Image (cartoon, rainbow, N blue to C red; front, side, top):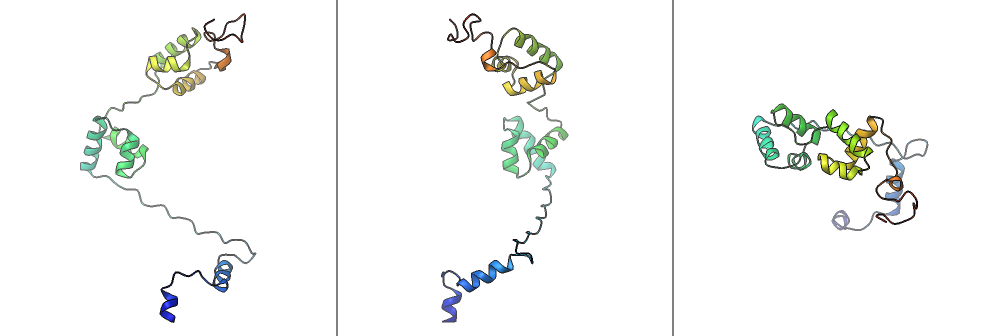
Length: 157
């Protein structure tokens, strides 16, 4: 009988459940706070792993893919790559590119078109323009999409 109770899949008795619930509460009847999780120690990469990391990045792997493969955060991957002298593919928008983006934006191009022209995402271009004090148009304010005399006319008419 005792062995059957020890190895059975039956649910705990109501008394056992009540005792367990009571033990998880503090003196004021609130659920007790769980102890803080102690963070794991950071994984260190050997020189061979950093070399393999650099090879895979130069072969076309993204920082996110490498982070998953090596089990470390993407910023640490970037730090290892920069430390190994690898030139990163994605770079911030330069001042010359921002000036070109401002000119293109003022001529009426959309953020998406500017981004594809300069090799950046539209949100990257948008953030760069905002940092330089450019007011971003609303979609319905786009000069190339709407006819000024009839704002409700379909684009291109």
